[in-house]
Amino acid sequence: MNIKKLIPTIIVVFIVANIFGFLIHAILLKADYLPIAGYYRPKGEEKMLFISLAYLSFAIGSVWVDAKGDEKKSWLGQGIRFGITMWLILAVPSFLIAYAVQPIPTMLMVKQVLFEGVDKILLGILTAVLYRP
Image (tube, rainbow, N blue to C red; front, side, top):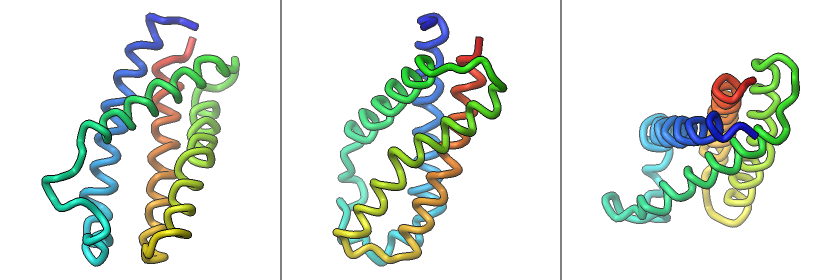
């Protein structure tokens, strides 16, 4: 594992994941969250430290896994495969379970899963570009 590539890759993935998360959940899905706003903390009372810790843990874990499983194949293909894998491990189960136990509208769950799929694939490609040998 190349620590000189690992640390900067983690930092960039952390920043970009935060940006994508904001774009998806605060902008693209804002109207979808309004009807169920009562299920979430009031605006301004979000626990941003925990959101940041979640994105940091994702960045560390995903970059570390990618670095350990680095194949000597096309970085683009590896990034796409890795993004799909992260999506299947993280986003799909999380949103399906949330939908199963919380009164979340079906279309919101579908949009969350699809937007997160694009997000994870782009983050996988970014990781592959930054960490490739």
